[in-house]
Figure 1 (cartoon, rainbow, N blue to C red):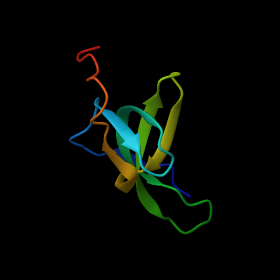
Figure 2: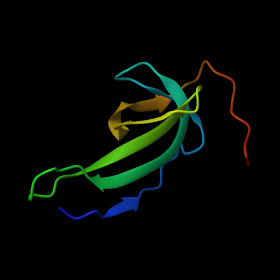
Figure 3: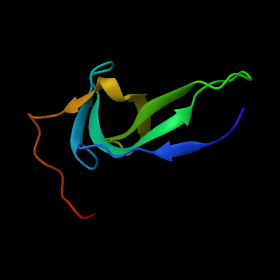
Length: 78
């Protein structure tokens, strides 16, 4: 298994988002095309890295990410 990955641009980076799968909200920190296989056959997926209010980061499929429109915008540039 290779340990390669690539950052992917996304329109919601550094914005408040909601993970549709869990309902959890946070700030989208990165989108990474990552090899998620634990076998010899590579399987690539785009994962969204979201930091929640407690500061803990979690991942979800990019397709599960939507803007959290009912929340105030995050402070930019920090």
